[in-house]
Image 1 (cartoon, one colour):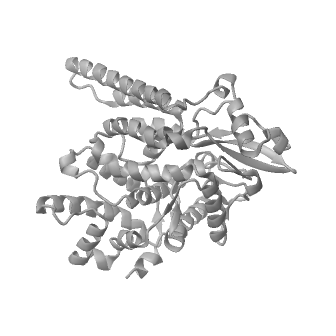
Image 2 (cartoon, rainbow, N blue to C red; image 1 turned 60 degrees about the vertical axis):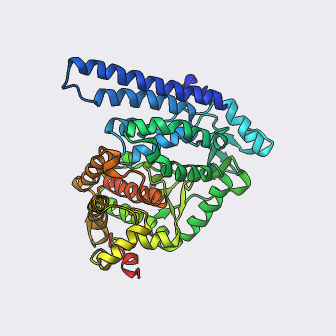
Image 3 (cartoon, helix red, strand yellow; image 1 turned 135 degrees about the vertical axis):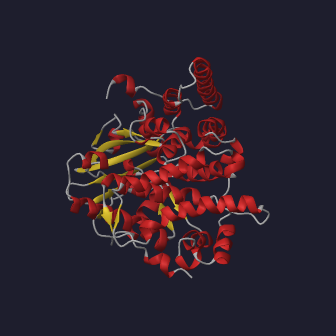
Length: 439
């Protein structure tokens, strides 16, 4: 790691951070002005260069702010159809390559947590981060001959979440091409989850709880956690060797191995959803590794969504054949999911149901199949295409802002799961007995 990257610090004050957001908004505004000036002389000019320039400028600024600002970039990079592909490609760096925290701040954070410097706690501690993301970064350490991963939270992240989200909201609305009000329920839910993500004591508790509950699932590997070396700003766990999916696929693994890992991933997510009532809701590639022993290693439980029972029943019942084929029952579930309102006009109702049925036709395909090929790019492309079409409609057309807030992270979990399985090019048994048991 070069010296320049190791000396990055984080603007912590509200004014400093507000200035950064204002600077970002100004850059985006200038880029729009330049684009539309050029378009006066070239009507065939498309938006791709504008989107690419905006994506670079926004990512560069948000990566310096870290926290909720960078987390939003990471989340939007996973949600096909929310943003043009130029943003998705650039923001995906937030999963792996965010600029790291400076060495002195790392030492300060550990000293505040334990009253000791890193070299007084661990036998070895690498001051250079192995990777840096939105909420924290990871360092390698050794204690009593055991290789450890020490996750350190960025200073001031928790305190900045609410104000950051208010400032990033108009920027997000502009690049997603919707009105700010349409994003309100999304931002409220995101704020709640982000506040949980900054509670490392809660994350440690959930990590140990879910790891234990899922230990019976074949081919899963969880790190051992060390509460004695953890705090509200630091989590220490066993270091898991392995490759991320992109690296793994570059080794040209057999179809059998890819299918086995894909099945493990599917079983892991669905067991949590249907049996535990809480689920790992951040299924981006950076949170999983493929170990040398051929297991799926789970690295992070920072984002866990607790699923209310009433929502769970309504969400999954709409893809149950007895519900989809019963108009009255189906409509009742759409009201419970807040997709329809009792005061909707027939025109609005028809529009929403039309879009919903298209999504459900796509969503239910894996659940109905005992052998589903997630390596088929046409399936993922269909999801992307439908999301993009809806995203490009006007507010009046799409009735933006509909839907229960609980659906935000559940949708993200399953579409993130589908994308991971697509990257693995896995064919799995995805039939879901839990849905068929719903009453």
